[in-house]
Length: 318
Image (cartoon, rainbow, N blue to C red):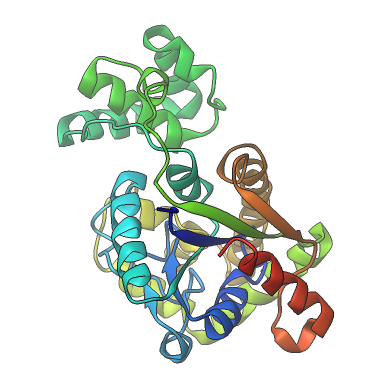
């Protein structure tokens, strides 16, 4: 029996993935499953550009706003949840369309995910404390003494991933790189992907325009409500693009203009890392990928010939 088919709609932040996924789901009878690590948090609809309630009503959407910001999500949790939703969609005769920009999530499906044991609060708290005391570079140096293989893979300034590597080593006595070497087989599905890859200048302008629109839509009020929860700043939701900058503005540390500029620049830098993930891991062989070198801004901006080409690509393996 042939493996079921799932479609991945991938691309950097602000490339038009959500709009493309809705258009595809309407035409192909699909269910859209979130593959963005920040859009899972229910408190962050505006600042993460989560689909609106009106957009969610057009076609089925799953795994959007399903976790409180106080609970850290993970690739392992998402993979289990996504596979469950994919099975439900397939059983209902609908095409699972996984839409997002988190390369690690896509890689967990297409190339497997290491079965790393859950990390306890003591190890997690130690990693956060050391990161705060020593900074990313200091903790990276400490990690290199106990887990050289993992440290060699991480940039010394990437505090989030360095802390994660430290807590795994502290909890299990084994390095993250060693755990990842035991990666299981990918999910038993056939995956094809549509990859949006707009020109850099187009993406930069879209990011700036979208963040300005977020502010008009109430992003500051959303972040103020998040601040009132007094959550641990190390939680993933507290590091979503725009959250640290707008938090700093609300504390009086940055003007609104400075916060907006910093958030736009940080988001732009992140899109470069996304491109690397998609190119070298998440959408690497055996995933068959069709790249669209433009930002998707709706069907009215796509020629009939281009749209027919996209649909034909998806149906060829469906």
